[in-house]
Image (cartoon, rainbow, N blue to C red; front, side, top):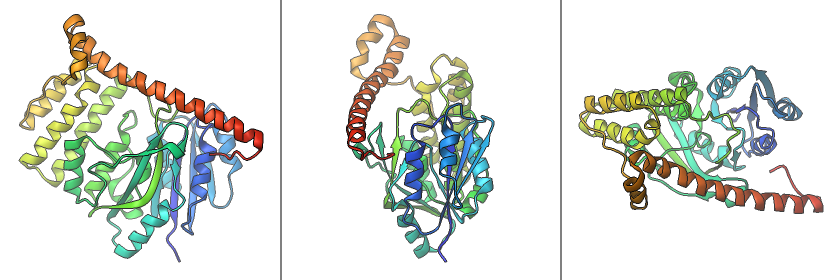
Length: 344
């Protein structure tokens, strides 16, 4: 009998996208899947939509709002599968995603092996998703994963992973409840307890970006503190595997890349990051600004230039998102009028 795969979905105020996410989960070609949705105290129609899908293979529970990590832990507690597929409530799985990874899992028969895959980013229209390979899109040893991720500032999105129950048990629960990088720390912990990462190119997922109503929390002082703690813990996961000059240099690189996130009014966190980098044998430099922000720095000072370097790309993203939304809604209305528009 084929292994049961549990698809675990935390959902908070996700009424607009949840039906499409659930349809993508139920469309999986792998013969044995269960879907568990944990409604994290939503204030919209999320729970009602989830309940409309409830059946023997779809379980829906609700809890007071406690954040995505708590919802994921609750879903994992209920899961019966021998493999775990994490899935955010606004993302999508290719129908063959799990099958592609499970075929490799059956061939390798190593329950400590972790499986990754290709992911594309999109705003509203999944058919416009951009799949941009990074240096992580390959088979990796645990050390290779950490060095590549830290040195190149790249990542795998949560939905890409397929994790055995044994690895989930070894890694433990999600712990970074207020951190914007809760998944980054969690999967560093999973990788550290794995025998390696097997990249399956055909296992494709679709990561919706720019959705500010998702489970993720906005930056706040508490979130900044939790973010720094996540980075500190991720560093510890690498050093537990290899405490070497190259590993320490990669850790300093990680802190350097994330320094702008800490510099937004948090001199105390910047000081902690600099001290940690010093303990690792390196030094953090002021974030380098692109040439186009230099006039702002000359006229208004480094803080204004740093804010501009953060704000302007977000404005460009917002403009692209609005355009995609307009095209999505135009297509939606057109198809509804013809009676053929689906939930995706």
